[in-house]
Image (cartoon, rainbow, N blue to C red; front, side, top):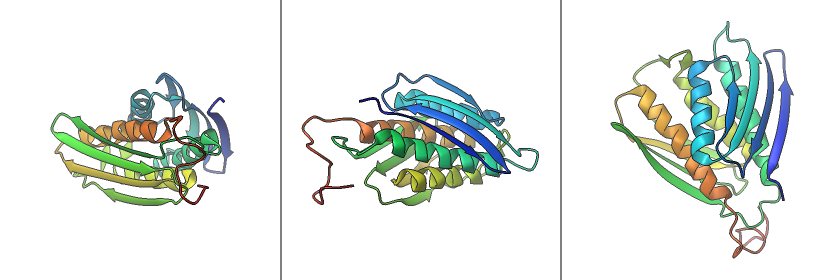
Length: 195
């Protein structure tokens, strides 16, 4: 069973085409027009071992908000579609990732109940051309469209680039763990019998 998905989304503000292979090798081709965001998405793919393709055109002359949030929406939809019925997946994943002086933790549950707890205090309003407040908005969009319970915490850090990079790497690793197939799991990982 191939766990892949392709999603296209076009609005008056953005035009996005995204493809993901959950069982990939960490290859990525990302172009959102926001260099720092492209870097973060590539890190997510590499450290989660997902193959990811993102082509996004948005109204970045206004700001980065619509593009970042809409890519999050589409990525969440693609993750949900690629995982299909979620049979035999571990469902839960947690990762702690250090990046120099920063340490981030991401924990996720692919159980179909979207919720986000985001605990990171950035000291700069932007890194490159990406507003730091959009990091939380991106992950909220991913989680609610993937049906994911997502907890993000920067335990400590000083450099905003390092803190955000640690988050994206930890998210890739946590999602990789949660989406891993385990042949001991018959059906879905829930006493309800469905996710």
